[in-house]
Each structure stands twice: as structure tokens, then as C-alpha cells.
Amino acid sequence: MAKSTAEQLPGPQGTGGALPDDRQPVVIAALRTPIRRVNGAFRELRAHELLAPVLGGLLAESGLPSAGVTDVVIGNAVGAGGNVARLAALAAGLPVSVPGVTVDRQCGSGLDAIVLAARLVAAGGNGTYLAGGVESISTAPLRANRGADGCPEFFRRAQFVPLGYGDPDMGTAAENVAAEFGISRGRQDLFALQSHRRSLAAATAGRYAGEIVPLETAAGEVASDDGPRASLSAALMGRFPPAFAEGGTVTAGNSCFDADGASAVVITSLQRARELGAADGLLVLGTDTAGVDPRVLGMGAAAAARRLLAEHGVAAADVDLVEFNEAFASQTLACLDELGIDAERANLDGGALALGHAYGASGAVLVTRLLAQARSGSAQAGRLALAMISIAGGMGTAALFRYERLGYERLDQAAGSS
Image (cartoon, rainbow, N blue to C red; front, top):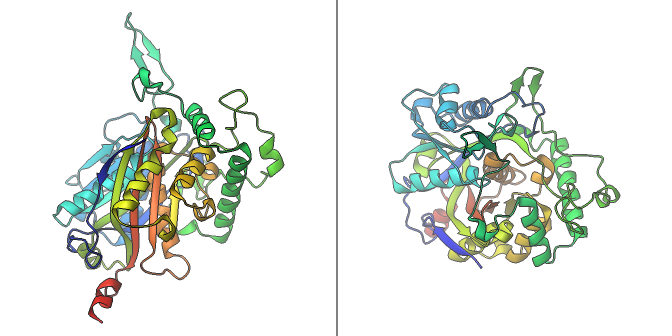
């Protein structure tokens, strides 16, 4: 079904790969803003105003001097253009010598920005990058084409593929996936309810606290997400009507909602990470981006992840941590089913069904969550982590990581010398 463009990074030394430490990418810090509903607490904050505090927070957490940033790579989907990466970098106080580049792969933009930065590290130069994504849907510009008479003809969303492919809306594509892959309404509702319950439990336990950068607004400081709903129940979920097709199974309850937010990481070489005194991080083992039929665009993540895992000889059962962007319960469950990943093992602290979908930021949020989860509990080195996101137009991006303690001798090297 899919045509994939593999963007594989050779494995780290000691695992049959070829990258030396000065070219092995590793994520050493990851932060995000609270994720808030559109036209809510962040309704007056533009994209760079959401992102700049995150960039500043990353510098402080990692000990990276601002002049030591090689580039700022940021994903954005519906912004005003003009290179928000550069704008946010300067707003964060980075010196004018630090450049910025903005990436647009729609919903995948934040993860693809991290992928791009990883490949820049792997290409050499021992660089250090701030990479991630941001979306201010609340302040996004109105968009219009110029009509024959020169007057603006406003449109709700961009065209993703030629009309001959159908170019379905997201909700319609989610219905297509549910029908084609046999994802029932009951499964969708229960998965969405679980997302809310897991998110609420994570917030209560303080598992989000270390990754959130509070933001100042006109109404005061905002330090928490506002999406998870304690009032939801199975009975209430069952009362939502179909949202996109008569007699359909996709509802407002088992679909994500639009949100504002930003997330980014520090990604550098293993050598530079140690020089900075980083205690641990996520080594980037490989990435993959795939294309699928736009009619079932939600399946793009499965196509990318399937190829990625196969290239690295990793069985789905061997992946310890899985983060998948929950745009719709139907496509999330269908992708997990296709990969043979039990839905109970994915998104352990909830996902976008509860937190919301801040388009260009969502892929970076996945990586932020993976680093936080890898560090939790016993923080066992060697744990494999997988981030996946499906993308408008029929695409998907996946990235495979391995958690390592960097302050100690690499476990694989130590084992080889014993």
C-alpha cells in the first residue's frame, strides 16, 4: 500500500552501525508549553511567543550557551510564514548569529524538524540544534486565494493532494480508515476515554510537570493543560453523534480537538552531549517517512514505522515506549493493529485525544513525552522508544530511539570489553 522513503541513520557504535560519537544524534533535553484549546488561554499569543520560552528553557536545562546553537529547526503548519524559527530564536534572546529554518510537513512538522536536525548531526560538524514545532491556531492568518476578479476567496484548509485523489478532509479519512480496517465505534470510544483517564492520572501524579514551561498571559500564568476531562464516561461517549458521515463511527468524542502549543528538544552529537555534561538522552537510531493512499491518510504512520522497524531488525514487541499522535481513535487503533502493538502499550500518559492537537507541535510533543517516560521509574538504559505521526495528504513519519545514560560508559561498549 505504501511507498516509503527511508531516512535511516546507521546504528550507534556497538550495535553494528557506523556512526562515531561526533555524528551520533542524541536528544538530551525536551520541553513543551501547556497545550490549550484554541481561542482559550493562549488566544492572544502568536506562534513565536509560544515557542520562545521553550527555547529559553532548553538552554537553561541543558547548559547549552546560546552562542553554541548551530541552528533552530522548527515545524509549523498553519502559521503566517516569514520563518517563525528565526523570529522565535531572536525573541528567546539567541544571538543574531544563530539562524533558523521552518519546516512544513503539516501534522508531522514537529517530528520532521527533529528528524532533519538528527540528520544534520549525522552529516558531521558536531552541531547542536534546537528542533521542534509550534502552532498558534488561535492567531493563524485567514487564508484566501485570489479570485478572477482579484477579490479574496477564503478557504478553510489548504489542498493536500490533486483532486483526482479525492483530497478528503481529516474526519472523512478517519471514517474511511474505520470502515476499511474494521475499527468499531465501541473500540474508538473506549480508547478515547482511556486517553483522558491516563492524561488526568499523569497530571495528578506530576508526570507532566518536568516537561512543561509555564507561559505568562494577560490573565496570568498558565502552567497546565486544559484538555483532559474528568466528566467523561462510557455512557457519555456513547451519546456523541457521528461527526463526519451519516451512520459513521467517528465522533467529536473520539476525535482530537484543535489546540495551541509548542514543543522542542536539544539534539546534538553524543560527543557534544558528554561535553555539555548531559546525564542521559535518547539516541536517534533511525527515521522513516512514508506515503500512502490519501483516502486513508491516517495509515501513514504505520507504513513508516513498519519499514523503520524492519530496517533495524526490531520487532514491535521489543519496543518499550510508544507515542502515537492521536488525531482520531480510528486511525490510531488501525495503525497499532497493523504494527502488532497492543493499544494498552501506547501513549501511557494519554495523547492528543485528551491533550489536543497543536498541528505543527504535536510531533515534537511525542519526543518530549518519550524522553520524560524513559527517565521515569527505573530509567533503564537500552529501552527502545518509537514516535509516530500520520500526516495530511497521505504520509507518515516515524523515529526510533534508544535511551542511554551518557554520564557512564556506554553499556554496549562495556559489555563488548568484558
